Amino acid sequence: MMLVKVMFYILAAIALGSALYVAAAKNLVRSVFMFFVTLFALAGLYVLALADFVAVTQIVIYVGGILVLILFAFMLSGRETLEVLQQQKGKFISLSKLPAVLLALMFFVVMFVALRQVNINDADWVKTAVAEGNIMKPDTVLVESIGVNLMTRYLLPFEAISILLLFALVGAAHLSRKEPQA
Amino acid sequence: MSNYLIYFLVAAGLFAFAALFALFGVYAERKISAYIQDRLGPTETGKFGALQTFADILKMIQKELIIPSKADKWLFILAPVIIFVAVYMGFAAMPWGPGLVPSKVNIGLYYVFAIISIETLGILMAGWGSNNKYSILGAMRSAAQIISYEIPAGFAIISAVMIAQSLDLQVISTQQGVQSGETIKFFGFWDVTNIGGLLSWNIFRAPHLIVAFVIYFIASLAESNRAPFDIPEAESELVAGFHTEYSGLGFAFVFLAEYSMMFLVSMIGVILFLGAWNTPLPNMGALKLADWTTNIWWGIFWVAIKSLALVGVQMWIRWTLPRLRVDQLMNLCWKVLTPLAFACMLISGIWRLWLM
Image (cartoon, rainbow over the protein chains, first blue to last red):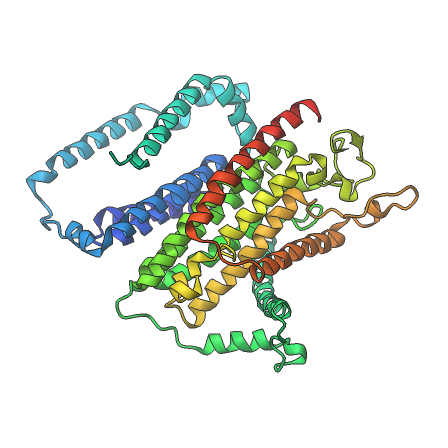
């Protein structure tokens, strides 16, 4: 139990530190690569929460897909464009940052209040789940339960997402099609 | 506490294996290419030139690690490490024999698939960090190729998983031999549960998996950047592609990663389609060949032999076929392999429902 706690704090520290670097770094490409570290630490946290399938999916989709595509966009755009992007006005406090600060503060307040109201060590839904034996053990096969739930309880959202993805696919194919020479 | 000691020992052992395999692989590649091109290959160092790669690695370790002055230092140094670690971590979930697996993960296959995709990121990092136009062109070609070929490879894997009904590599392995807990049918009609051997491998349990295996094998060539899919490092166009600027240890790591990757993808192919650590010899009446040749030591032997054979085929293909052009490569992937892989997945579903 002790080791799990130590691992949690190490991973959380890595995730937070690298996320700060991503937000603060001037060098855009480096911050993209640092984002990879953040995602990896998050995947580690998922594993600690016994959600190994989610952890691996996170790596497949974010690292193998999205990060690589972001990097592609960077590499296609060339250094000059990037340098213009990087020369932002370097003031730490400015009026244009006000909405972001407000949003962050409000989000923080919501989180803080939620944390105060919920007694996390003694929550009702945790108690009922434990009483019903509806819990995950380290050797539970998560894939089966995900599959069954996707095909029964969450069928409608699942289908809605697939239609949305089909839209995106058709749209992308249409955008990249060569127009016939009129 | 001794548990952790064993973990470290296993990790070190896997690293030693990867390094030794790379040494052996380079030597084998040079000898095979020499044979195919009617040359002799290395002959001077040691008997039949067997010590040539040891000499090479000694030279490489002594060499200076040159960092180009305009390169992004951190990315440049870290990239080869990430490329290698990505492949090396994949070995953690690979079963070597009955009950012998470094890490028993019940989504092992998915994990390996995810880990391999990290290699792309390392290659892009190397390409960008070098600040060299050849490197970046090579890195982009490599990433485009790997992302595209992950799709047919993924669906070929899924069609095998649908037959096996598990993502645990050890479960998939056990199913394909005499130790299987369920009935195995050769081509869907002949019960071979107690006969085992060659007949109970996945490619014979459901014959369309032969097609899936070929798709997977072609895609795995592309994923490990091997000829005929080696446009990322096309020597005649891009000097050496994404690792143009690397020297000394950095280059050694890139090389180590390439050869470990060859072995890893071959091993995944063997586990999913060619019976993993199960013996090819069937039980014949009183001659219980399959029972005699199924245990941990035979398991290691069979899985190594089968994977090495696939690596041999990879080398054979590399020195036989010319390089594909970019458009041919994408045509092959999207217009041939992907639809075929989809068809395999569909047949797998029908097979599972009606014939098993």
